Amino acid sequence: MSGQDRSQISEERLAQIQNVLGREPEDLISNWTEADEDGRTLTLFKYQDKIYPAFGDIAFGQLKDLTIRDDDVYIVGYPKTGCHWTFEVITMMLQGEAKLSLRNKQQTFVDVVNPTKLATLPSPRVLNSHVHFQDMPRQVVEKKTKMVLTIRNPKDTAASFYNHHRTIARYGYDGPFNKWFPLYLNGRGPTMRDHATVTVPGYKHNSLSRISLDLPREIQRLSEFLGISVTDSLVAGICDVTGIKKMKETFLKAGSKFSVRKGCHWTFEVLLMILQGEAKLSERNKLQTYVDVVNPTMLSTLPSPRVLNSHLLFQDMPKQLS
Image (cartoon, rainbow, N blue to C red; front, side, top):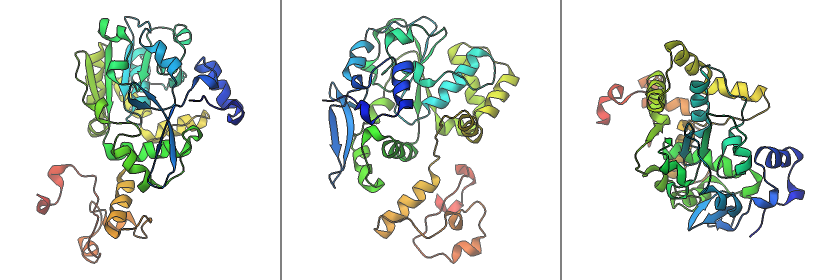
């Protein structure tokens, strides 16, 4: 069992751990590793037989007794399922202004933030977490706190989570996707199933797939659930500033990061690798099989098996699919 090595952490990351999380690097303990079939390891944390990122048992030991305020909103979900996007939308609703928050989502990340830091934040707080329901603060249930559960297509989630594990040094993983994927599929890094199957009064599912179909409607539904009055102009403003492209641009200008991968191209490449039996990116262009725009005569010239792709709704797809 070990915390993060202080000598291996940048000054920027050290400042974030100390000033935003209210922790020290040694507090963020890793006590578990998973290895892919080639022996490459993924550094994690295990708590009560459940696998998490390297949050540490100091934070988890304090989490159950965390003080919850009556006006808190609690976002929970599997990593990479839209927690950051949902945090921004709810914050805009509460502040009544379609403007991205200057607060760092990490400030309200209850899985690691020191309770003394959380206590200094002004109300209403939009708390967020990746822990399982049974590991949440007791008062979330006792006070019937409004909870929003984020859900995303598992294939798209896998693409984002793999990138997360590869690019963040504390995980220590450098393997290819096809070696990482069995860890994800078998719940070894960690499991998605237990997040998506929670059933408890007072929570709402927030699905990225459903949001992409009708964003204004879903913002209205979310506001009704939370008991927040929103005007049509505020909804329109939120839709504008929370577009993926605009959010990336805004956070990039602010020197921060916002990463979302929709997954169509990623899925195209994975399926082709499976079909060709080789973990190698295809020389085929995904646009060649984009049925929404490609001329059918061009599609007919492509060799089988074809991996066709589309953004159409089901009722507008080719009749022969059904």
